[in-house]
Picture (cartoon, rainbow, N blue to C red):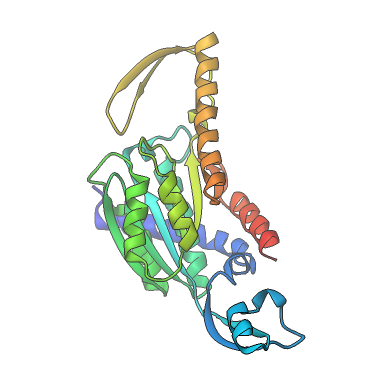
Length: 293
C-alpha cells in the first residue's frame, strides 16, 4: 500500500511526463478525430443548393413535397470515458514498465488531452468486477483525481471481465461517449457481442498494452511462469519446437483480438510496454482523421 506522499509524488511525475506528450497530441489532431461524432439533432428546414443532399429528411420531404434537411449542431464538448483494466495480469513487465504502469500512463495522457480540449473525462477501473467509477467532469482538479485513482487503486479481484465492464458502462452512460478501453485483453470471457452493441451507440476504441515477452521469448532451457489471475504455475523448456509453438500461439491470440475488433468495427491501438506512447496514438489519430474527412 502506497502512503499519501508516495502516491502524490507518482501522480505529479505522471502529470509532468504526460503533459509534455499532450502538447504533441493536441495540435488539432485529437479533436478533429472525434468532432462530428458528438453532434445532436437541432431542427428540420427547407433544402438550399448549398446543403449536402445526404442531410435530406425524406419523410418530411415526402409529406410536404418540398425538399427538407435535418440540421445538426455540434455539441460543445465530448464525453471521454477511460475504461482501464487493473486485473492481476497487468503486473507483468519485462522492461522498465509493467503493463499496469503503461496503461496508467496511456489513460492519463488521454484524460489530459480531453481536459485540454474542454471535454469531460470519466474513469472506470475494472477487473472481474467494477472496482471504481468516476463520472465524467472537466477541469484540472478532476483530472488529477482521476490520475490519483489510476495510480493508487488496489484491485479487490484478480480476474478480467471486459463484457461486464462495458455492460456496466452502457447502463450508466445516457449520452454518446468516446470510450477508450485500455487493457491487455487477456480475458477468458466472450466479449464480442458486447463490443458490437457498445460500438453502435458509442465511439469505442480499444487500446491494447502488451509486453514484448508475451509475444516473443528468448531461448531458455528452463522457464517457470505464473498466471497472475489464477495463480497456476507452468514449467517448460523454451527451446526448439516448444519455442516455435509458444510464438505461434501468442501470435494467434494477438490476431484473434485484431479480428474481433475488425468484425465489431472497433479501432485497435496496439502498444508495447517498451514503446513510446505518442507515436502509436498519433498514427491512430491521423488514420482516423483521414477516414472522417
